[in-house]
Length: 200
Image 1: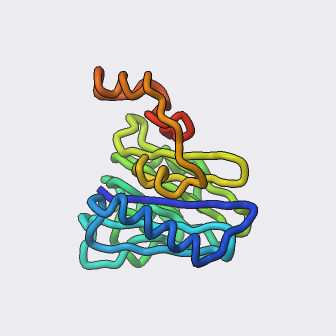
Image 2: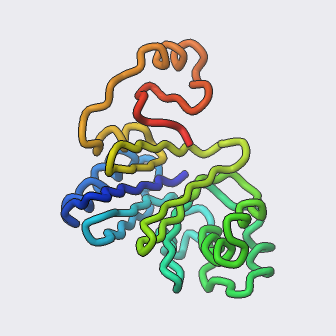
Image 3: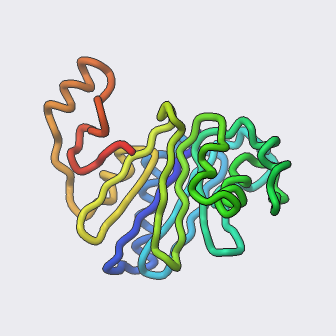
Protein backbone atom coordinates (compact mmCIF):
# COMPACT_ATOMS: atom_id res chain seq x y z
CA UNK A 1 0.00 0.00 0.00
CA UNK A 2 1.50 3.29 -1.17
CA UNK A 3 0.19 6.79 -1.68
CA UNK A 4 0.41 8.53 -5.06
CA UNK A 5 -0.42 12.20 -5.59
CA UNK A 6 -0.27 14.96 -8.17
CA UNK A 7 -1.31 18.59 -8.36
CA UNK A 8 -1.51 20.41 -11.70
CA UNK A 9 -2.33 24.12 -11.73
CA UNK A 10 -2.29 25.22 -15.35
CA UNK A 11 -2.50 28.93 -14.49
CA UNK A 12 0.60 28.60 -12.36
CA UNK A 13 1.55 28.44 -8.70
CA UNK A 14 4.82 28.98 -6.90
CA UNK A 15 7.08 25.90 -6.77
CA UNK A 16 7.28 26.36 -2.99
CA UNK A 17 3.48 26.25 -2.69
CA UNK A 18 3.23 23.17 -4.90
CA UNK A 19 5.85 21.38 -2.78
CA UNK A 20 4.09 22.45 0.40
CA UNK A 21 0.75 21.14 -0.87
CA UNK A 22 2.26 17.78 -1.80
CA UNK A 23 3.70 17.68 1.73
CA UNK A 24 0.19 18.25 3.07
CA UNK A 25 -1.03 15.33 0.95
CA UNK A 26 1.81 13.19 2.34
CA UNK A 27 0.73 14.02 5.88
CA UNK A 28 -2.87 13.06 5.11
CA UNK A 29 -1.78 9.68 3.75
CA UNK A 30 1.42 8.85 5.65
CA UNK A 31 -0.14 5.60 6.89
CA UNK A 32 -0.06 4.39 3.27
CA UNK A 33 3.71 4.52 2.86
CA UNK A 34 5.99 5.10 5.83
CA UNK A 35 9.21 3.81 4.24
CA UNK A 36 10.10 6.33 1.53
CA UNK A 37 8.71 9.51 0.08
CA UNK A 38 9.63 11.60 -2.91
CA UNK A 39 8.36 14.71 -4.69
CA UNK A 40 9.20 16.27 -8.05
CA UNK A 41 8.12 19.86 -8.74
CA UNK A 42 7.74 20.89 -12.38
CA UNK A 43 8.32 24.64 -12.35
CA UNK A 44 5.21 26.57 -11.42
CA UNK A 45 2.75 24.15 -13.02
CA UNK A 46 2.73 20.79 -11.28
CA UNK A 47 4.10 18.57 -8.54
CA UNK A 48 4.13 14.77 -8.35
CA UNK A 49 4.60 12.84 -5.12
CA UNK A 50 4.66 9.33 -3.71
CA UNK A 51 4.99 7.80 -0.28
CA UNK A 52 6.04 4.16 -0.47
CA UNK A 53 5.47 1.04 1.55
CA UNK A 54 8.47 -1.10 0.54
CA UNK A 55 7.38 -4.63 -0.33
CA UNK A 56 8.94 -5.54 -3.68
CA UNK A 57 12.71 -4.85 -3.67
CA UNK A 58 12.62 -3.08 -0.27
CA UNK A 59 16.39 -2.48 -0.41
CA UNK A 60 15.94 -0.16 -3.42
CA UNK A 61 14.84 3.44 -3.38
CA UNK A 62 11.90 3.10 -5.73
CA UNK A 63 9.36 5.89 -5.66
CA UNK A 64 8.80 8.20 -8.64
CA UNK A 65 10.07 6.59 -11.84
CA UNK A 66 11.52 8.68 -14.69
CA UNK A 67 12.36 7.72 -18.27
CA UNK A 68 14.93 9.19 -20.64
CA UNK A 69 12.07 10.51 -22.79
CA UNK A 70 10.78 12.66 -19.92
CA UNK A 71 7.84 10.61 -18.63
CA UNK A 72 7.28 10.16 -14.90
CA UNK A 73 5.30 7.37 -13.24
CA UNK A 74 3.96 6.49 -9.80
CA UNK A 75 2.43 3.20 -8.66
CA UNK A 76 0.26 2.12 -5.77
CA UNK A 77 -0.16 -1.65 -5.57
CA UNK A 78 1.74 -4.61 -6.94
CA UNK A 79 2.42 -5.88 -10.46
CA UNK A 80 2.82 -9.59 -9.82
CA UNK A 81 4.08 -10.56 -13.29
CA UNK A 82 6.87 -7.97 -13.40
CA UNK A 83 9.68 -10.56 -13.69
CA UNK A 84 8.11 -12.00 -16.88
CA UNK A 85 7.41 -8.54 -18.27
CA UNK A 86 11.01 -7.51 -17.65
CA UNK A 87 12.28 -10.34 -19.87
CA UNK A 88 10.22 -9.07 -22.82
CA UNK A 89 11.38 -5.45 -22.64
CA UNK A 90 13.65 -3.89 -25.24
CA UNK A 91 15.05 -1.58 -22.55
CA UNK A 92 14.72 -3.41 -19.23
CA UNK A 93 15.30 -1.29 -16.12
CA UNK A 94 18.21 -1.86 -13.78
CA UNK A 95 15.97 -1.64 -10.71
CA UNK A 96 14.22 -4.81 -9.56
CA UNK A 97 11.05 -3.20 -8.21
CA UNK A 98 7.74 -3.82 -9.97
CA UNK A 99 7.22 -0.08 -10.52
CA UNK A 100 10.41 0.08 -12.60
CA UNK A 101 8.78 -1.80 -15.51
CA UNK A 102 5.93 0.70 -15.97
CA UNK A 103 7.64 3.31 -18.13
CA UNK A 104 9.62 0.85 -20.30
CA UNK A 105 6.34 -0.99 -20.97
CA UNK A 106 4.45 2.25 -21.60
CA UNK A 107 7.07 3.44 -24.06
CA UNK A 108 7.27 0.07 -25.81
CA UNK A 109 3.53 -0.63 -26.14
CA UNK A 110 1.85 2.76 -25.68
CA UNK A 111 -1.41 2.86 -23.75
CA UNK A 112 -1.95 -0.82 -24.52
CA UNK A 113 0.77 -1.63 -21.99
CA UNK A 114 -1.92 -1.80 -19.34
CA UNK A 115 -3.20 -5.09 -20.83
CA UNK A 116 0.16 -6.67 -20.05
CA UNK A 117 -0.10 -6.07 -16.30
CA UNK A 118 -1.34 -8.61 -13.77
CA UNK A 119 -1.99 -7.52 -10.22
CA UNK A 120 -3.79 -4.81 -8.31
CA UNK A 121 -2.65 -1.29 -9.00
CA UNK A 122 -3.32 2.38 -9.53
CA UNK A 123 -0.87 4.13 -11.85
CA UNK A 124 -0.25 7.72 -12.86
CA UNK A 125 1.99 8.69 -15.79
CA UNK A 126 2.84 12.37 -16.28
CA UNK A 127 4.63 14.08 -19.15
CA UNK A 128 5.58 17.62 -18.11
CA UNK A 129 6.51 18.81 -21.61
CA UNK A 130 3.03 17.87 -22.86
CA UNK A 131 1.40 18.72 -19.50
CA UNK A 132 -0.47 15.44 -19.82
CA UNK A 133 -1.42 13.03 -17.06
CA UNK A 134 -2.79 9.53 -17.68
CA UNK A 135 -4.34 7.35 -14.98
CA UNK A 136 -5.07 3.62 -14.85
CA UNK A 137 -6.45 1.12 -12.33
CA UNK A 138 -6.59 -2.65 -12.35
CA UNK A 139 -9.81 -4.10 -13.85
CA UNK A 140 -11.40 -4.72 -10.44
CA UNK A 141 -10.42 -1.32 -9.09
CA UNK A 142 -8.86 -2.78 -5.95
CA UNK A 143 -6.49 0.13 -5.33
CA UNK A 144 -8.13 3.49 -4.65
CA UNK A 145 -7.61 6.46 -6.94
CA UNK A 146 -9.52 9.74 -6.71
CA UNK A 147 -9.38 12.98 -8.64
CA UNK A 148 -10.65 16.55 -8.61
CA UNK A 149 -10.86 18.79 -11.67
CA UNK A 150 -12.03 22.38 -11.60
CA UNK A 151 -10.98 25.24 -13.84
CA UNK A 152 -7.19 25.30 -13.99
CA UNK A 153 -6.72 22.73 -11.22
CA UNK A 154 -6.39 18.94 -11.47
CA UNK A 155 -5.47 16.81 -8.45
CA UNK A 156 -5.28 13.05 -8.05
CA UNK A 157 -4.48 10.95 -5.00
CA UNK A 158 -4.92 7.59 -3.32
CA UNK A 159 -6.85 9.38 -0.56
CA UNK A 160 -9.96 11.56 -0.72
CA UNK A 161 -8.88 13.53 2.33
CA UNK A 162 -5.52 14.34 0.73
CA UNK A 163 -7.29 16.01 -2.19
CA UNK A 164 -9.76 17.86 0.07
CA UNK A 165 -6.84 19.22 2.12
CA UNK A 166 -5.26 21.06 -0.84
CA UNK A 167 -8.21 22.13 -2.95
CA UNK A 168 -8.50 25.86 -3.55
CA UNK A 169 -11.80 25.85 -1.60
CA UNK A 170 -13.47 23.64 0.97
CA UNK A 171 -15.49 20.95 -0.83
CA UNK A 172 -19.20 20.56 -0.21
CA UNK A 173 -20.57 17.31 1.22
CA UNK A 174 -23.08 15.11 -0.61
CA UNK A 175 -25.21 13.86 2.26
CA UNK A 176 -26.96 11.28 0.07
CA UNK A 177 -23.56 9.78 -0.79
CA UNK A 178 -22.61 9.90 2.89
CA UNK A 179 -25.78 7.95 3.70
CA UNK A 180 -24.92 5.36 1.03
CA UNK A 181 -21.44 4.96 2.47
CA UNK A 182 -22.76 4.40 5.98
CA UNK A 183 -25.55 2.10 4.84
CA UNK A 184 -23.78 -0.02 2.20
CA UNK A 185 -20.10 0.62 3.04
CA UNK A 186 -19.35 1.69 -0.53
CA UNK A 187 -20.32 4.33 -3.07
CA UNK A 188 -21.77 3.20 -6.40
CA UNK A 189 -20.23 4.43 -9.64
CA UNK A 190 -17.59 7.13 -9.36
CA UNK A 191 -19.18 9.14 -6.59
CA UNK A 192 -17.69 10.05 -3.24
CA UNK A 193 -19.00 12.01 -0.28
CA UNK A 194 -17.64 15.14 -2.00
CA UNK A 195 -19.32 15.80 -5.38
CA UNK A 196 -16.15 17.50 -6.64
CA UNK A 197 -13.94 14.48 -5.86
CA UNK A 198 -14.60 11.45 -8.03
CA UNK A 199 -13.31 7.91 -8.06
CA UNK A 200 -11.28 6.97 -11.13
